[in-house]
Image (tube, rainbow, N blue to C red):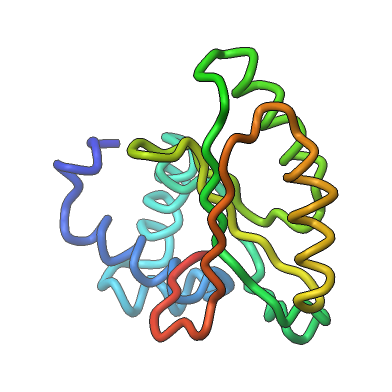
Length: 153
């Protein structure tokens, strides 16, 4: 498969359709992108094999799971060592409140997406999970008020 920068229009259409509806049938996908079902299936399988498509997920409404408080949390580390990063990432991997953990550049090292039941549950996470980690130097919370566009799978 060609790299993303050299992907043809049909490959981009396939990716677009699958990102909108990962459960679309191969027959419907083929119709939408203008291929025969067998050619479409081969293209999708090649996108999967080459690692362009890394998986399929269900989109879940956090509020329906009782998680109505969502925040993005900027975390600065006290030490910029590999050991500090590994320790922090291991702690985040086991924290059920953390839905996403991204290592970023800039004035902070990590950006987290945190989902909890309410403000009190977030305060517990902030104080008893993040606040006790020796790697953490700073915590800045951005409370999510709405998501007019959210294309996460």
